[in-house]
Length: 227
Picture 1 (tube, rainbow, N blue to C red):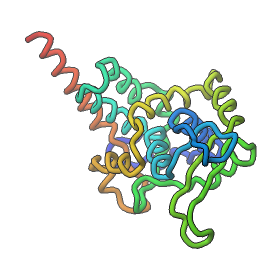
Picture 2: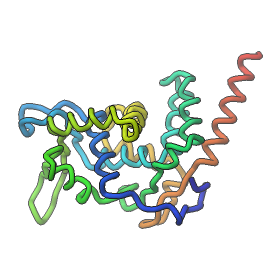
Picture 3: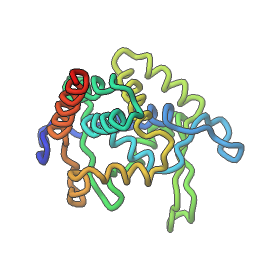
Picture 4: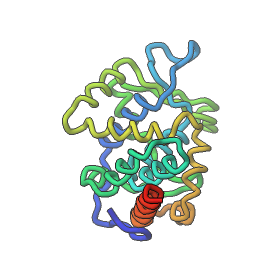
């Protein structure tokens, strides 16, 4: 993973299939229950693209996810065991292999979902419902996981290799909770590196700064135990 302020130009871009797998895992774990007015045969829904993009950012950037976990530990929302989880996110090879930076646009981290989501729609794993005037103004897009998609996500979770995505999404779910997309984006903008990224540029890693936080937290914890 690149260090703060540096981009890893040698890292290949994520494939369409990898993006689709991430979206499938996110909708399965981080969606809410559909209502009677939603499409029949769907089992979960993510109500806005902002929320889906924000969660995808954390899934693709383990250093930012680790930082959120530390913040939740320090606030008392999570127990101290998650400090070790945050450390693994920074140091284990698996998260780094799945690290794919996202570019920043007007509403923060953003990468078009159409290609990846169309792959899910082709296999009837998910469907998107767009509200607004077609061809003019789409006010909101809602993303629905079908029964077939839920079964595929369960198969994914049981796979020896691809099951990593489902495990990582559990951490994203802890960090995201049930907050709306705009609130998640606001939290991400609290990161100086994220906020100061030029439009169209990839959002750089904060791994070095998170490691400093980990050391400080460990030191403070040891000082409290010895006091």
